Image (cartoon, rainbow, N blue to C red; front, side, top):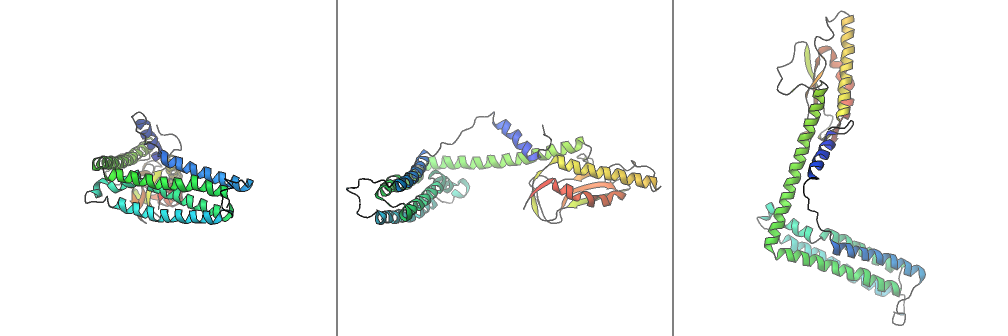
Length: 328
């Protein structure tokens, strides 16, 4: 049921979510190695701050004579070199998964997702920044030990995990093909769901407008009645119809009907027409479907209305446009 003030696309999504919630869902396993490594780096950052603030020492009898800054700088350089070589090389390995059939099955995308390259890049970047900050402001023997154990070693583990995941997929063609087929199915399912949502939103909007007597029923177009004309509210700039607020559209159209009643009454009082209802109220004869791409000047909404009401369109057109959510 459409709720007052809710957009038709939102209502359609809620309807689809309610249907899917009754079906069995499979949730992806969380990337625990990546999560653990990220927590390790955050703990390393917190403990390094604490060590620098409290002037803690770590194995002072074996610590460097200086404050550990040269060793930290060397650690940062080694870490940066490993990241600079490891991630591009892994990307090249993933690209090697592309074959003629990959265009349909997206095997390279499966390897990219399975190896967690995006998460790996974020972790490595965070680790480099963390060690760099330690070199500049938090240098000490305790900080050196913390950064080595909680940042540098986890970075090596993260890169090793990504390589292992990528190679395990590339060396198992059957599993790679199965995952690629599942990815393709997920994409098709998402496209079908989006199409269903747009179609259901259009049905809801037409139903609501017909309930208010503001929409010409489908299949009943017999031309324009005598004394009536069709006028349009047009697009000001190109865009895609993302959503429609039925309450706002109904309100704007009913306001147009009210203006029509006033116009008819003026004409009747002035002796310019025989009846204020002989030609009927304005009705919508054309609406865009959700997801439609419209250019500047294309018809947004078309009305059939009494000849004397044509000027009212220009009064209500801003309200009518405001009912539509249009993405550039």
